[in-house]
Length: 172
Length: 102
Image (cartoon, rainbow over all chains, first blue to last red; front, side, top):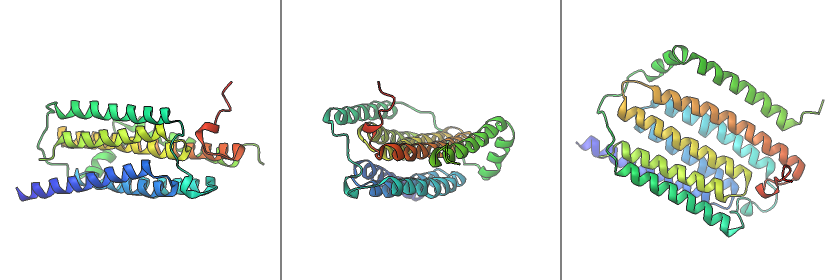
């Protein structure tokens, strides 16, 4: 029983941390602070994955999101930033657009949250699998091998395309 | 007792914050960051449904990994596009990206 209470407390703490970091990312006016808050959000999501028993996915999340994508975003920010850093990430100056965005987001969140809260979802109290990475590897090389190969081709094309776009096509 | 509903609502809130960022920000890099946040919310939903409905399989985690792969490709190409446009217009303000506008 006490383990469940500890589990609930961990969920509340991690979820609050993740939501606060996400809000900080959206509301900050400094683009560098936004990127740092985004890294905290990624780490919070990784902690949620650990809490859900998806250890391998949590490690992938830390490696790919909090590592690679964060470095990529920070490099892009350093390359495109000019002027006062405290004014780099302002909201849309048109108040109508800003309010419409807030309205759409609030409407979607409220509607989905209420419908989720009042629905009885079927839940199974089973144990998580022991060897998730092994089962994932068998699925990747078994039933989902075509999707796996397509993802590999997608990554290759994305890398080549990103290099060509970033350095300019007509430079020799 | 924390169950599937709580995780789904957390995913919904993160997705809503991401949508707010996409619609209300005007820096292109910030919009890309908000899209990453939305993809993370989807990943939380995948893993939570996996954990609470079919805990004996890992299909939700499999699809979450595919989402991570597509997100990595998307952010690489998106940032390269932003760099390329920045070289032409000297701006990352979405308001200035109107080359295709009549």
